Image 1 (cartoon, rainbow, N blue to C red):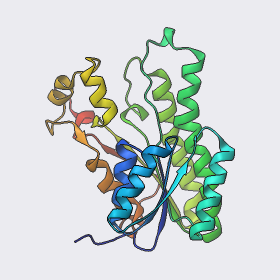
Image 2: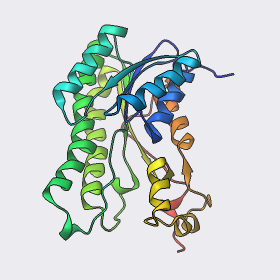
Image 3: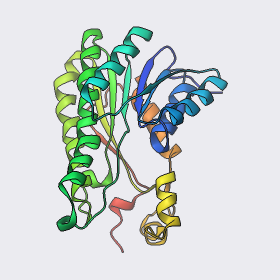
Image 4: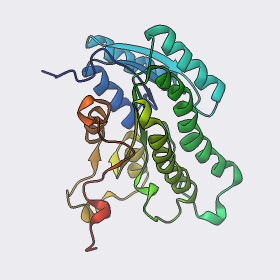
Length: 256
């Protein structure tokens, strides 16, 4: 039986239609939270909401392009109108970007910055205002190994995710005195529908990733959802401005 560590709380999860965001949204609902689901695909969100409802949870479908600050503000206003406050925010919306740097167009560079960084900032700013009013809340930003590791052909992605980590640290120090905790989860190689499609297309080989990972596997979305519940719960009340790297040991392995 679930302990329901988030019972009575309301949360917004971006990127909730698939992958890590979906897994976190479902985990929050299992733990008793009301969850506002955000992504550009209303169809995907409706499917997730139906799964939450079927298991006795409460979900709100909020289609939104995180690049649009006015749309972000509207989502936050909708959630507050429905539930009175926002206790947790997870910024999981993001896109990968792989290209030789000299071939990276202005448009693709801007797309990565707009979704991965600006979208995270817009939601932090809008939700932060609500949390400051109530002097309570937790924000979890989703970073990446690219937030701190140097990996080739990821200039735009690395720049955006590195900035997410520093945004996390800045907001954490600014808002902690007001009862708001801001932290970052940086996943390693996690099996998602996108990763599966890259493997199927021959664009990604998991074998060398697994060989370097001491856990000897790639991660699953459940490996991120559990820690995301912990960071949103009172069990982590003294954890502020931290980056939790979840990569099976990939980043520390020094042999090959």
